[in-house]
Image (cartoon, rainbow, N blue to C red; front, side, top):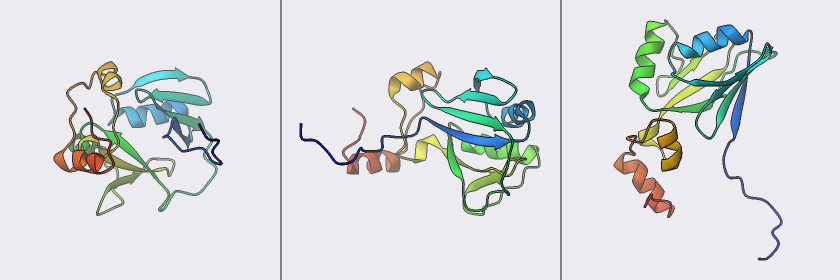
Length: 150
């Protein structure tokens, strides 16, 4: 195999968010997300996302995010929208389901079925999401890149 000059990016292991208080952050995110807590200390908490995780770190140091954000993939985007509305969380994008958490982190909620991001079947099974399916358009995006599921 020839030696390469650069390594290919494969994906994300985790995203880390700075929050004011770990317990408050877990309570906030727990209002609209069902999750397993991997571990927690006074300064950090790790929320399992199957083979990835969301890290919460105590101590927000910057101003609230404007355009900077990350897309959090969920099984039911409409349910998250309803829960956020019930919580009186302001949606900050007319086009997307973006909001700021209480510490100014901008999150975009993305539905699993409509994007090419894909969890392996065995990971979905381990998460109790074996029935989660992709839309035809998402499957076509994957097929166009020669990444369609078998």
